[in-house]
Length: 365
Image 1 (tube, one colour):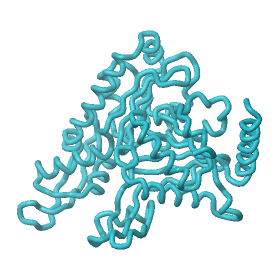
Image 2 (image 1 turned 90 degrees about the vertical axis):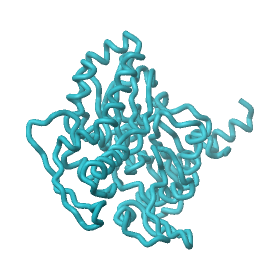
Image 3 (image 1 turned 180 degrees about the vertical axis):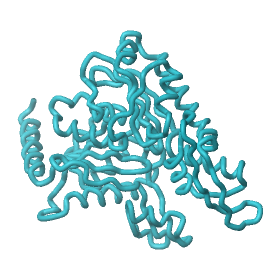
């Protein structure tokens, strides 16, 4: 190491210590549907929709998060409430940057907030490209982060479930989020086999919208479809019959209409997406090395993410794979809790981060 590189390293260490005292590390689950923020030493402080309302005439951002979601479907033509992330990756760089800046500023309010530049660890889908990784990193750095690191969402979910990911043993996670479904087998701090599907909670909402249009001749919005999914969504026959009073616009008369939807209707509506997820879980099992598969059979499959809360999905997966399936505690916060555990023990869990030079070299970028 040359003397100049040595001085540069000392300079970076001093800067990191200085800013580290002012701003605690932050873990972010940058989801298609919701963004969750964990602050080291304080827990999960933010859980808000990944929605931004923009005035297209002026380019001004009017609202972010919960306030923006209230505007979905209720805005005039020049105001658009949009999601800057599609299928778990950045689709609108500028808006994503503004959203991240808003959330980082929100947890850093107070004295000397202008000096607070935290280290940020962000969970991303396992199937993203190098360009998409770079976009997330640059958005975080431009939003006020001192350093930005990335971690695969299934790895973060497994850590959030307290699985022994650094040991020589197979751990299988199925994380069904809003934009993507992550299926992975993890061992020795790395992902052995994985698959990232663009079929998850949002696609299931669209399935319900299509089903209502085709079967009931009624048009409903995405928000209503999500309410139906949460209320009576299921993937396996239930013991009790569930119903939901569905209100929308009659496609024949154009007038308001109400129909009663039951659990069988929703199960039929979701069947295509559920079938794709189940088939891909089977494929991953087929690709898993025999020694690791033995561990998975012993430990079972872990379900995480909001989509994992669909009634009977665990029973369906167990029935189709022959492996026990269990829902982790509080699956909606699995990824962000995993980022928090990594930040709490960064020295020993460094190996689980995605290896990319830009994540470590903020000062030289």
